[in-house]
Length: 93
Image (cartoon, rainbow, N blue to C red; front, side, top):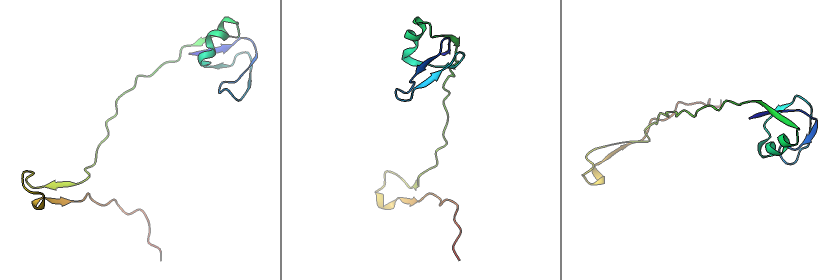
C-alpha cells in the first residue's frame, strides 16, 4: 500500500542508498511501515490495486514427429525432425 510522507526524513529503502524524503512523497515502505506510521512520519495515501494473475496459454511446437506402430520394434519407426527455422542471416559475399 502507498503511504505519504508527513515529515521529512532520510530513508534507505534498499538498505544502502539513503534518500531524503520530503513532505508529499508517496511510496511503499515495506516492513518499516508500522514504525513510521506510529512515529507520525507517514500516513496511508491510497490502496494499491493488486491485479489478479491470469493464466496464459503457450502454443507448443512439436519437437519431432514419430510415425509407425509403437508396439513394433524401434527399427521400424520413422523419425522426422522438426522443420528448420527460416534463415535470418544473409550470406557474405
